[in-house]
Image (cartoon, rainbow, N blue to C red; front, side, top):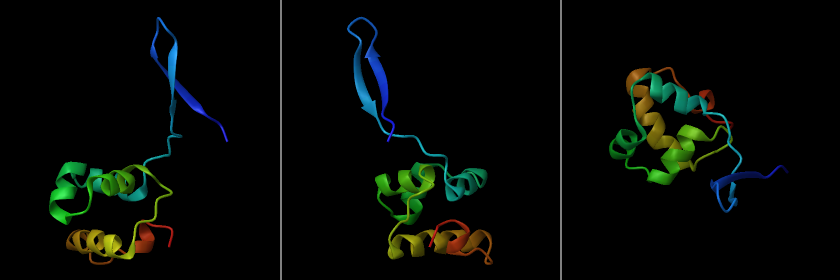
Length: 90
């Protein structure tokens, strides 16, 4: 596994480990196209802020069943034909 480092101080060369960046999730792209910010999504769905960040940004993240249900309740207001499988690898 590759490790990513970011130097935070150019004079001391102090570096910190940075997590591997994954591509934006399908759901994150869809929600951004619909105009949702992560903050708005937290308020509307009452899903934890860290979970929402993972939903938007981690294409490998699979949330719990109850979280998927909350997400899909909101998405179906935009398009009733959407399915959880369209966004999550379940």
